[in-house]
Image 1 (cartoon, rainbow, N blue to C red):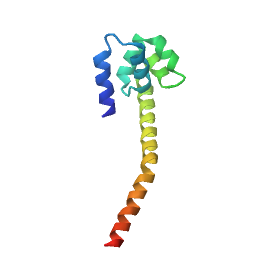
Image 2: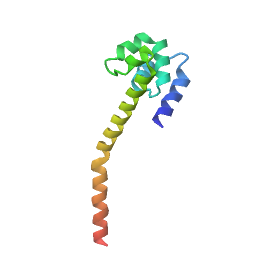
Image 3: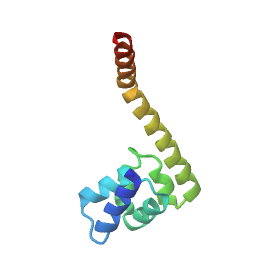
Image 4: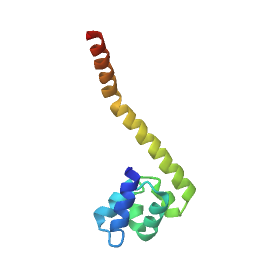
Length: 104
């Protein structure tokens, strides 16, 4: 869902992007083809952000397969961080559920 929202934002503003949009897209886009297109058309901005998002180097090089792997690694890392973030809440909800069963 996030990927589609980012793609929609890119499509809506790509004709005349401002600095804010460029930085946002280079940090957040999750589509290899769009990142490579963006890198080709705005290479100086892309080079500036390679240190914060290393897979942008593959976008600059036009290396679709390396970029796809980098995006997959990012996605897996984000999913793991998300699981870790929600783990305490899930555990608390599970404890509450068991407590309610015991009280009945």
